Length: 101
Image (cartoon, rainbow, N blue to C red):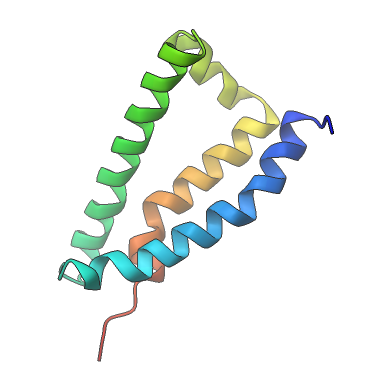
């Protein structure tokens, strides 16, 4: 079925959030990473940089989009929702990681 880009992004969002939360809880203890705030923020920001690098590369390679065209997508409502998800992605290790006791 056809749906708007905003609707498609909204349908995808809960699944992305579930994976973000699961990874944020699993990755730090799995790799014995420090549980302090600065380290967890660094993990999220490095992950965001890697994710965005891959997204840009794939957008250019597979979809033929320029960098300007890719960032223009953030100026539409579905882009706003995606930007909010990216913020949660970067903050997830800090927000959802629970130290093992």
